[in-house]
Image 1 (cartoon, helix red, strand yellow):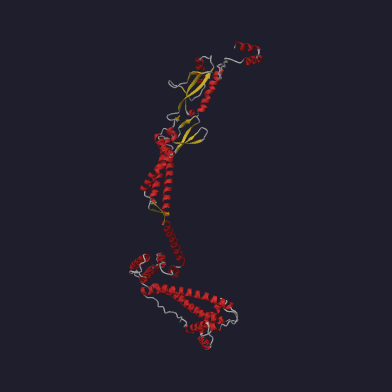
Image 2: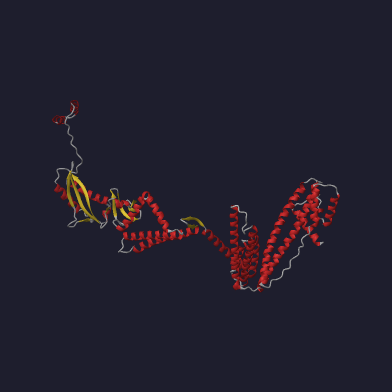
Length: 617
C-alpha cells in the first residue's frame, strides 16, 4: 500500500513537470489498479462495438493487467575477503554501469513518448473516442517509466555500495604483487591476438563477398561473434588485472596509481559503450584515490598525469608522418628537430665567427684578411655541416640528395651559372689573397675604394665617399683590378700638364722640380731610385706636354683625387709665378677661295687694317 502511494506521488510529480493532461481529463485510468483495468476490459468485451480503437484499447488493457512490476529489492552484497571476490565485485560495478545506462536510455525514451501523448491528448476535442486509447497508452508508459526509474535508482544505490565496499575492503585484501603485472601482460596479449584474428576474419569475409563466394569457409557471422565475445572477455580480464595492480599500488600509496588509472581507462576504450564505462570507472578510481591519498594529493597526481597524457598525445600527433620524401616518412617532429639542428649550426657558426674575430683582433701575426678568411670559411663549414645533419635527422638519404643534385646540375649550369661563378670566385679570392680586407682597389675610373668584406658571392667596397658598393666576385677574377695597397702603401703619381710653345723645356723642368721639393709635404718620397721627376712627353697641337712624376707614401695614396689636386695647384702656381704661359687650344683657318660678292661684303665691313690683311690674303 505504501509502495502504491509512493508511485502515485511520483506519477503526480511527473505529470505536473510535463504539463500532463488537462483538468477535465479522466486521470483515473493512470492511477487505477489492476481491478479497474479488468472491469474496464470486461465492459468493452460485453459491448457490441468493434473498431480499431476498441481493439487497441483491449490490447492496452491486457498489457496493463498482465504487466508485473519489477520487484525492486536491494541485492545482497558481501564484503570481499580475497582477490577473486574483490575483482568480482569490481566487474559487478561495470555490469551495473551498463545496466544503469540502458535503464537511463529507456527512461528518456519513455519520457519523450509521455510528453508526445500529453500534447496529443490536449489537442483532442472533448469526448473524442481516441482520448480513452491515449489515456490507456499513457498509463502503460507511465507505469513502465516508474518501474525503470525504480530499477535505475536501485542500480545507483548498488554502485554506491560497491564503491564503499571496495574502499573499505582494500586494506584487508592481499595481492600477489610479483605476478600482477604478468597477469596483465597475459590478458593484453590474448586480447591483441583475438583482435588480430577478428580483423583477419573480417578482411577475408569481405574478400569472399566481393568474389561472390557464399560459403563461409569457417568465418561465418556466428564465428566472428564468438571471437568478439572472447575478445570482450579478454579486454575485461585486462581491465580487471590492471585494477588489481591499481589497488595494490593504492594500498601502498604508490604514485604509480595515476599511471595505472590512465591504463585502465585506455583499456576500457576497446569496449562497447566505452564513454559510459570510462566515466563511471573514473569516478570509482578517483574516490579510492581520495580515500588513500587525500583530496589535495589526488588532484595534484591527476593533474600531473593529465599533463603527461597531453604531452604523450602531442608527441604522438607530432610523430605522425605528414608526407614522404623518397620513401622516407617526414613528420612534424622530425621537421622541428631538423630546424632546431640547423639553427644550432647557424648560431654556432655565428658564435665561431665572432670568437675568431675577437681572438685574432689583437694578434700581430694574423692580419685582417686572414682573420676574415678563417671566420668566413669556418662559418660556412659549420652551417653546411648542420644542414646535412638536419637532413639526416629528417631521415632523408643523402645519396638521394646527390642524385637530385646531379639532376639539377644542368639547370644550375644554365639558370644559376652567375651565382655559381661568383661563389667559386669568392673561394678563389679567399685562398689566393690577391685582394684582402683593407686593400684599396680600383675597378674603373669611377669605382675605387677599400675592401671591407669578402663573402662567398660578393665583395663590399667602401669608397672615399663612404658609399658601400657590392661587387660580384667574378668581376675581380675576370677583369683587370688595380690593387693600390697589395704589398705596401707606396705609389708614383703621374700628373700631366702642358705649356705654350716658345718656352724652354729645361726651364720648365727645373722650376717644377724645385717647387715640388720646396712644397714641404712629408709624404713625398725621395731616394736614389724613387725621386721627383718631370719629363717631356710630347708636342701637341697647342702645347708642349710634360708629366710630373712624384712618389707618395702613406695614407695619402688612398685619396688619389686629393693628392693630384695638391700637385696641380703647385704646377699652376709655379708656371704662373715664372711667367710660363699655359696654353689653350688654338686652330688656324686657311681659305683657299672665296666668292667675289662675299669678298666685297667683307671688305666693306672691315676696318682699314683688316682690309689690307684681307687683300694680302
